[in-house]
Image 1: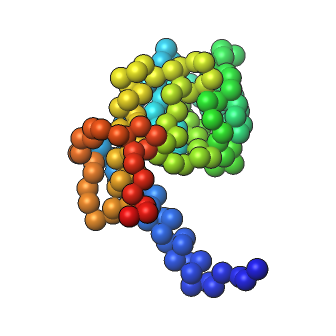
Image 2: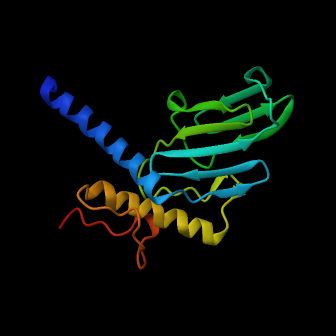
Length: 176
């Protein structure tokens, strides 16, 4: 097995960073499709799942216990279980984080293991916090447009509408 030349390695690092920035810009322009829950909401991109939990104002970080595993999550605030269970799909736990913002919002970012447009989670946990059919459909449309944006960086898909075959990430044109 040959080593990858440093120049090529740096190029791939640059390309990965550019795709991440492109994804972030796409989300900022196109907005998110939130799935409402009793504690806040969750939404997703091709790469990540975001969880926003409203907590009482004045909450301190020492009041929070958050465990982010590959397939499990547990969030407790002031000895009250907020979220606990098996995630819908696998994540990269070393890249997942949580933050407390303005002492009233916990934001959890889970990095998906499968980062493809067809991997649209229908629920946050297995059997819990499911997106209703309309929200699920809108989430899948957004992931498909995000995929098109990545594949065609010269175009802006942030305000595009999509119809037709967009389930499971849309049609595959890579062989054309």
